[in-house]
Image (cartoon, rainbow, N blue to C red; front, side, top):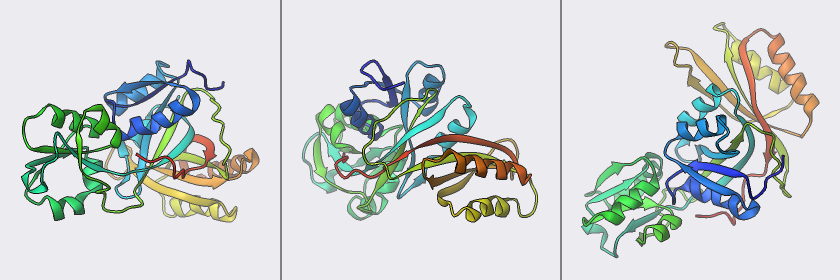
Length: 292
């Protein structure tokens, strides 16, 4: 199935979030229709129930690390597959209703990830301000736009326009190469045209038998085949203390044989109790033109 103007893409809203900025790239390229959702679970549920064709979700940030709730949802919804990825350079702005000096700002609001990505800047320039977490950067911008107090929000250039705010300070993230990796998920095999594909990336999720050397032997199967791992991490299964599921991303050529040989070997070594491929998809991550 190819993308068309009738294809709906869901994102974590409201309008003006970084997820909206990422979704907007696909909207402009493919003419998609965008649909905001208020939480990750309602967003993934919408894909599962086919209320939208695709959704875009943040999975990791170069400063703050992985988005655990997204990984858990991908593991729990067996119908969901990863069909593409996008790395979005992130530039945070400090926004307020009017141009005011930093020493007059009494509260700064934003999503916990955005606050974490600007922690050093906030400590240096706004040590006197209360830091308040919100469910999204856009909610923070909206709240500031409706307040009569000297409050500010950390948000996107898009939210500045949507909520008619002023930029008090630009590029306030602590590290300039701040990038968030987004996954495009669906229950269908959709086609994303991409002229800059270097390799394919595959994501798997598995649980290990609770035996000595289990993880070592699993990783050995990748080493034998000289397969480059780009990410490995664990998440609690939420069933009992000490039980974890693992997520591995690895770069591979678009070669089904290599993947099948690897999966067969992982199953045969009897160190894996469950194993699932979350997706094999084109990896062309960094586009310097995609800035927010």
